[in-house]
Image (tube, rainbow, N blue to C red; front, side):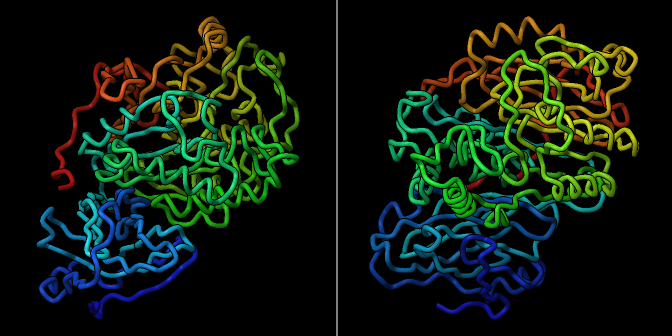
Length: 542
């Protein structure tokens, strides 16, 4: 089998596998599609489950997309050639590019192809072939450029396989009008069987520590039919949270890591990052750097942070109902990431600046008080409020530079929230909850795919404390779900959906729970009458 001379092979460790960018434009390639090579193979047929982990795509740019798959050959010590194609129709009659890439044990037989030269805001279909077998076909979409009237994203996080079934992914796969899935972390969980949930069993059955362990856990997740479905229909923009490594992790350790019995944290962290980089359709990550940004034309800039592993100092150790630590030098992001974030926000020319990140930024207090009186007491010191210097600098940056239309997207906390972001929510001179005056941005927090909500005791504490948090406009701390983020020039809207059951494989009735939005230039939340209508959409993956 020969390749078109307009394609060339480039290997790059930055992708965690071989990469084949397409150097020609999609228009030029489309004109020559009749000359592009067909897949040819005359060897022994590969295993029936060669493509058992499905296909995925991610990190959309206006002219490029990452395509991903994984092969499972019978001989794990031999490299395997994988052929790929991408086109504009479901039958692959209008192909724009083809190529081959080698899969081998060095990267756990995962494959990434960075296809360049594509059209902005366009839907494509793709698939892989190897050893005489054909993968499922996937559908993906590049980011738009120029003038963009509307965008629509699915926002999700926290999928503990041991706690139930991925109905969120199943239903997001059916939302064919989405531009991408924004996954805010906890894509996998590190626990062993019976340690945290018992609805489904883990592979391996013990807590994952080594590179082999992390790879096996990612492989188990990628065999889930609902997760495969959502990857097959939509590109992902993903960041990790803590459970991709270990619970309540930070740059130099984790609450759920004991060096005395589990080895050096640096080795475990490196193994987790390598497996994530191999198994997720992302660019980069191999050096531990996963913060990055995406332009969606003049309507939105998407800015994704790492509030876990890059620069976070250890949590302050305070418990529920205690006051924050007054240490301005402690950082959640690290100086370099914070400087990068400041520059992204200051230079963005888009209508909306969407900040995707892991832990809740808004205050969540058990007792409220103005900052001048100590600020009150907190529910969770693992959040931004446990790093008051980082939290206040972010909000001051927006206020001092008059940066409007910032929407923070958050996962981690296994509950849904809609909040005004204000540096002093209990000070009536600084923030008016009725008018929204004093709010510098808004925050939408997604509930979990399956991970459990607040324990009964904390659940009651939070419900009783909502009166201490006038900036919080919506909360649901018990039900699982996701939200749809809908953007146009006038407003940014979140519509939260929740499920009645995530423990039955065929259950899970979805219902609308709340709709909030912020008007352009307002920087505070108001209720919306109803969720935005779906957009028109191309057909789903074949």
